Structures are given as structure tokens and as C-alpha cells.
Amino acid sequence: MPVINLGHLSLDSVTRSRVVNDIAKACRDLGYFQVINHGISQSVMDCAVKSASDFFELPSETKEEYDTSSKDSINMSQAFLKHYAHPLSDWIQYWPQQSPIYRKYMGKYAAEVRREGSQLLSVNCYPKASQGATTIGLAPHSDYGFLTILLTSCPGLEVVDRSSNIWKTVQKLPHALHVHIGDHMEVLSNGRMKTVVHRALLKPEEARISIPSIHGFALHEKVTCAKELVDEENPPKYKESSFSDFLEHLTANMDNKHKNFLESLRMYGLQSIIRV
Ligand code: OGA
Ligand code: NI
Image 1 (cartoon, rainbow, N blue to C red):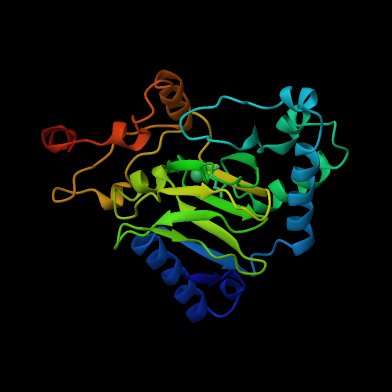
Image 2 (cartoon, rainbow, N blue to C red):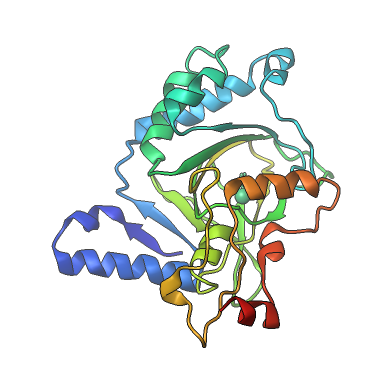
């Protein structure tokens, strides 16, 4: 697992370009990496996890007000909460207020982990694995945005290793955040970088909190293959799309769990030649 020391970005230009190259290489070869020295303090991370546990301990009636609770093909057994997080001042009013610390601590983490564009914060709570039951907490899928930055309370995430096509456990380094590539990065890079298929397992030892922060462009802004990467030999491989197109795709394919968003964007043969 590549570990990128983001602190090195502020050193001399040679070191900086080495870090940038390391990130590009990890994105191309694997699609994921961990970041350390990312500038978010351990206490902000701990408080985010704590405020999530605090929320999930509330009585069910309270949680139902917020739970999207659409048990779809991917969500197997975890309780979850999804809310927009940027711009924070527009959205925080819709966040849970029954937990006295949730808005304060999750708001702080959301602001620190954000760059620009849209940000969707999912907050998942997986139960302990019970004996004999399935141990899959979240079925295999890829994330729609450019990048997902994932904070978890304990291990449980698995990614498909591209070269061997087998599931690989993501180890949890102290203070590290896991980063992986989403569908829109595959589109932007015209297929040079590939979205990462991943899943979450339930653990027999403990319940697990995970907080993926999914980063993309603004709601209606279209993502296309970067024009620098498109020429006669490399026609665009994907149609343009926005986050709102993704949401429409989800609604339109509620019952068809196998119809994948990225697949719906793929252009084949003639279609892509005509575009050029
Ligand atoms: C997700 C996700 C991983 C995890 O919510 O999209 O992939 O470890 N979560 O819970
Ligand atoms: Ni995911």
C-alpha cells in the first residue's frame, strides 16, 4: 500500500515533484493510497468518529428523521447517514441536531477534509458480525466522484487488487486516511486511471464507523475526458456527465442493481470516432 507523506509537498521543488509523481503513479497503477501528515489533527479525526457513534446511539425514532434508509443492493446491514457538506453553511442546518456534538465535530472534520466543488459525507455504522451470518457490510461498488477520502474507526475495507483480481484488506496505519479513485477520475483521465472497486466487511470484534468524504465538481458541472488526453489515437472513451446525472442514474436504476454508472458512460468504437 503506497503511503504518501503530504507534508513533503511543502518542502523543496524536487521533493514536491517526487511526491506529485508518487501520487500520479499510485493513481495509475492501483487507484488508491494512504496519506499521512495530511494536516488534519488526530483529535479532529477522533471527534468525528465519536460524533458519528454518538449519533448512531440515539433512539431509532430520532435517527429515522435523518436516515436515508434506502436499503439498496449495496447497503447490506449498516446504518448510515448521508448529507452534503459543502458549502457547509448551506447544509449544516439539515444535519442531526439531537446529538449535541454532531454538528460541531463532524462540521470541523468536513471543513478540514474538503477542497472544492461538491462534497458528500457518508457516515456509516456497521454492526458487529454475528456468528453464521454474512460478513459483508457493504457490497462491492465504486464511488462516483473524483476522490474518496476515508476515515474509519477500525479495519474492514477491502479493495480489488487489479493485477491479481483478488480482494485485499486495507490496513489501517496510525493517523492515516485512505484515498481512492472514483468513476469521474476515470472519465477525466480518459481511462488512464481506473475507478477502484471496494467493499466493507463486518468485524466480529466490534461495531465499525466509517466516514467516506466523496469529492466532485459542483452538482451540474459536467465532467468530460480532459482534452489534453484526447487526440486521433485516443478518442474519448466516456460521455460527459455531472453529479446530478449520477443521481438521476441512481433513481432510474433503483431496481437494476447491476447497471453501473461508469458503464453507462462508456463509448464504444464508432460512437467515439464520430465524437472526434
Ligand atoms: C462507501 C464505502 C467503505 C467503508 O460508503 O461508499 O465504500 O469502509 N465505505 O465503509
Ligand atoms: Ni464506497
